[in-house]
Length: 311
Image (cartoon, rainbow, N blue to C red; front, side, top):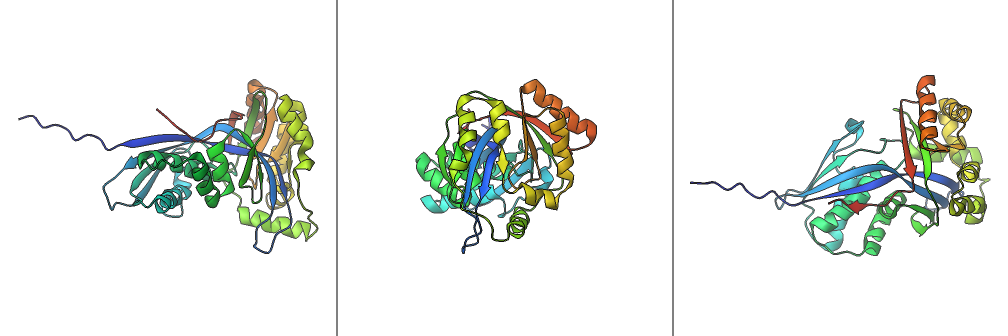
């Protein structure tokens, strides 16, 4: 008697990108505790990969993780991908039964939104797995509720974020930009960086507007890496550097290696360096390694596509 193997349960695989903030302008804290932001995101070709697998009814959500520093990623309901699956299930009225497997390709706790990319990938994966048929606009709304970086990882490419960074407008860009990233094993707390920002500005902050980044937007449209390097900006950088003075040396090493522009990415502690070419990015990264100015180095390019299904 021949026994037929049971068919494997359906699964869906989605890839979503990490990001760098080309500019981050932060207004004074509001009564709701949030800071108004104007930021220009660029997705980079470092990807998180999420596989969503169907499980038996009543199993609930589970998360497993592979990749560099996977041990630092929570596998419970505090994981943003877990929360994304539950949010989507609530919205469409299904039980949140899914096994999520995350493969990390974005540095963990590096200010490059790897966790947010996981959440964006999970929304796309569960939408397909559960056949919920939501539009991209509906998924974007759900993503924005989970966080500005989640909404951007869904969209990808280059975009301007306003409000809390979650109101996104695609930005015109030409060509490819080459990046090197210096990553530290010890993360920086985003709330701590914002608290230090408030201390340093002591209420002297001003309303932020996109007009301050006119030169940066022109550089993107022209595909001019030199002009983009000169226009990179981060209002949180002084706060991040005051909490982690060692990052100044990381920046100096990149400048000495000829980087076109250097900044702390988002709330840190990753330092991003814009290079002239792929080869130059590798040379900047090699300088960091030689000087012991980073715990790990990553080279890639941008802009990259947003969350998408893999065959």
